[in-house]
Amino acid sequence: PHLRMYTDISAVGTQCETYVFGAGLHSGSSFSAPLVAGIVTLLNDWLFEHNQTQLGFLNPLLYLAADKYPAVFNDITVGNNRCSSNQITTTYPSWCCDAGFEATVGYDPVSGLGSLNFAGLLQVLGA
Image 1 (cartoon, helix red, strand yellow):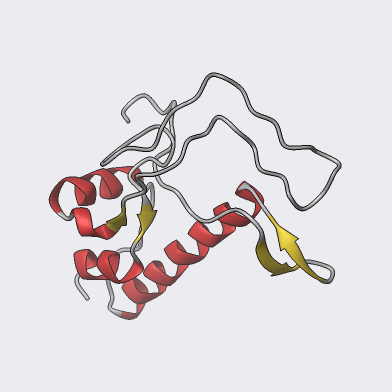
Image 2 (image 1 turned 90 degrees about the horizontal axis):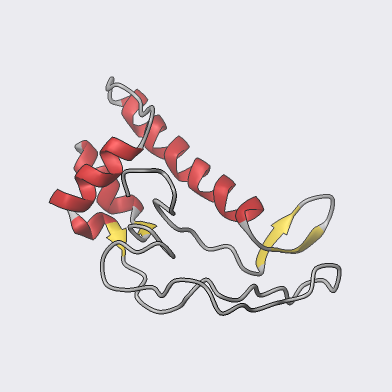
């Protein structure tokens, strides 16, 4: 987790209902990255309203929280990153390969520390 080669955190990213020039299903980091950005924005909003310093680079906070407050993350323990899953469009078909990683208990290269627990993060920040 220290060399920036693997995932730090995870978020849902498969067949998520969105509204982009019309309703539809979207997948991938195009959905999960804005989702995480929204969570961080809500945390910053809470900090601002309570006259506290807003978040900047998140990794020190994430790894400190994982060490001291593991309930801040929803640990993802099943799955792997060997196959893509594209069930929305035929433009980019699904594919699998032999190489990849398995999700395990705790940190793993597939899901990082896990997905964020918003209420748990608020508690760590002082709510």
